[in-house]
Length: 425
Image (tube, rainbow, N blue to C red):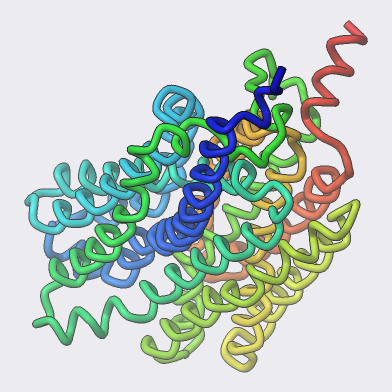
């Protein structure tokens, strides 16, 4: 009797499967890069034109200040839904729809008229960003289980590049296109439309949309619906670490140019300094995940990044204008805690389902933690009349970030922790 594994039908199917997986893998790589490029321009392009948007829509200062907290709020609310959508429709389909939501939101929000419509369209774009944020580590784990570090680095590098490009180019493009802030914001929708394209065939192919590639073991593909992620101490440590690094990032994006301007740095140079800070993530976001995956404990990387943050904030406090470029570079290095957090999400779970749950929990909880940060900085600045207290707060938050990041970097998985707790109970 001929074994089924050597039957002509099986052999032919296997021969057809290999090229199918090859093109799908290449398409996933392109899709990951294009998706990552679109995960921050909706935010940083608005920051670059916030004064013009305020004047154009007649926003109060308080409402404009609240805009800095809308992104993390949307990321927390919508990100928690991503694993459920992914289980039902497949991660590729959800990311495809997410890119479409980003494009639609960016096209609509400048022209919808009124503050309420502007906020609703912004929320639509942020919803697409939120679900894609959560599912990127899942897709990396499914398709590249042996290359989590390098693929997370590629994704993080593209995300940092998109962030820096939007910060640096939005104002010049707005001027070149006639000076209307509406056009300057809407132009970024074109990049999101391009990002939809590679995900369409992946979403339509159910074999790539809902199932892991054939070379991934059955253990990785198996869905563990009983995993109680909140029973893992590592999950909580990673969530708090994610929240504190996000707090630092949003404070930097929202307030760093103003700190430099108040210190006497010209407005144009202050914008360039922010772009430099964001651009530091382009090369380092590729290097840091690769280094992290080669270590059994990521604590030393956490400490190094935190030390750069402390040095940068100390410099801002003592000589904000005199060493502006050095402080921008140091804070740019410190902000690379984001790709490190994403890498640890992929390393702290065994299966793609575990990664999905851990990613959703860490990012949703983390973004909730980050919401008060930018607002508190604004309040301290307004009531103290200077940047001493806000900068002291920023530096102080580096200490717990280092502590919880070191705890999250220990060599263990959430599945093992949950199982151990269940056995102990």
